[in-house]
Length: 295
Length: 184
Ligand code: SF4
Ligand code: SF4
Image 1 (spheres, rainbow over the protein chains, first blue to last red):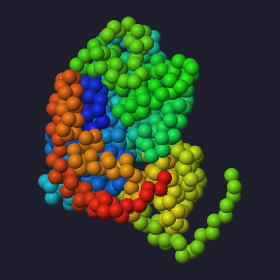
Image 2 (cartoon, chains in turn yellow, green):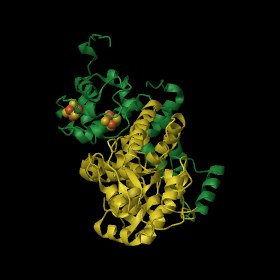
Image 3 (cartoon, each protein chain N blue to C red):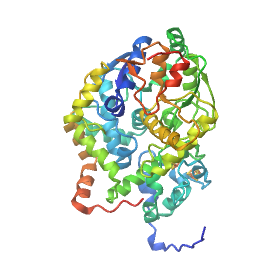
Image 4 (cartoon, chains in turn red, brown):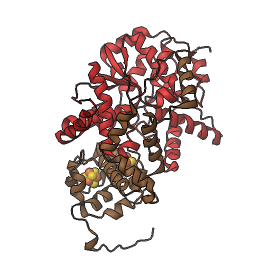
């Protein structure tokens, strides 16, 4: 199955190693990715929606038009992009007045939003029953003996009436995938706690939320926190290091994007042109040791 | 905490404020609020804000615009959508909150962080700068991972959309010095 691959901004420009891992996984699993030339920022579900909801909807619809022209559904590896594009798709299809407003503007620059391309986060594509079997067959280094915790994050699961993805209170889709890779997945109290990245106008909020999260992860003896969003990933990676430096307990828990841990399990060299697992503040040295992976 | 009594004058109430919001996308169910407070007890940032979500809704229904726009509640929200998820009456509080931010922005109250983001979007098509030395280093980095070249969006199209949706004018007015301090 082919998808129009929506890259966004943070991953292709700041963390291309995450994109490289996702592309490798898709290649192994037979998921075809086609480039969306001329796509812009999704746009940012916080800043741009906050400045002008009409601007947010129309730029989002322009991006979706590119996929519609390609005749493909959209795949993204960022929860922010997922939230924006899926919300734009759903809202415009539900609200004729805004559908017409957006198309009146887009019509003047040669686009027409029809709503024919559906929007998926890679997690949803990977959790399909047949895909899980394929994943299982592709595992070369089973993640045995390690304990993972998943952080689905807000923008993958809420609001569920729009995103229609997983249980918003007890999410389990990510865990299903991680278990298929051979890992033990632990449920923990702060699983659906927000990372605070989007509350960036008051830094205390993020500091506190991250501290709550890491305390719970340490208590549960987690080897790595698995994320599906570049914002959550960088928020926890940077705050995690800060928290560990302040603490006298060993608190360093690496934060790893789902496609990266999958690539590890698929036997991809963790420091190659397909990913760079060391490109983060908290290095996953112990995790690699446990998996007997040398770099 | 010290208890203060607040006297609200009927002349301060904007009677159609509720419709200014409920008429917009994603906010249709605003009027159904029963003040149960579930949104506030679910809120990620409740300890940091001076007006809890259910009270913002109450002020909105009453027509107390200034009280809402002067509150830090509208800017500290993390848009985690917990309130919208759990509301028993289907009130989309997190969307209403975005609309309230839009309202503040129209009055020239714009966080500099967001202004940087929209300027990057206008200049580069992305929220991260992609030009000059920055572009060179990003491209080199992508090459290292064997990734395809970025084909940037047509910036005239992005600018046209920002203009047609009215945001361009708001930004220009803000630049002209009509800008007020952001109240957080
Ligand atoms: S949860 Fe919904 S009904 Fe209850 S106070 Fe909040 S907005 Fe109103
Ligand atoms: S979206 Fe904002 S107001 Fe709603 S629960 Fe989250 S932080 Fe609170």
